[in-house]
Image (cartoon, rainbow, N blue to C red; front, side, top):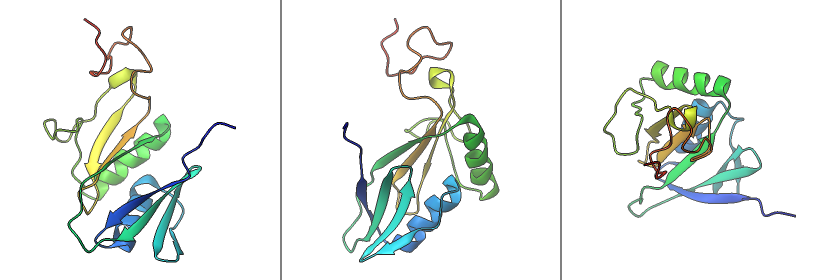
Length: 139
């Protein structure tokens, strides 16, 4: 059997608030409480939110979705007046990217973790793409 990521722990100032945010934006099932964790199931893996009393270091979480699901995410970001951008560096606000001839968007959760939603995995369309991923060396 190939390994599958089961879960990862995400530190949060308010696990309930962070979990509710993710559930709302990605249209996921309601979180469940498991001991001291607030658990959000994302496909076969879960993000287990844990109360943090120390300053929280920002982490990055990327989710691949269908084109239809992307439309829903973008619609919920706009409806919730949640700032979003096309890049991880905050240089292209209120835009999405089309890397790998798909679509992608970045936004922050309440604790400053960077969330990304993409319809194509990085580099999946290669250099032949109309919009190759900028991480590829296509020169």
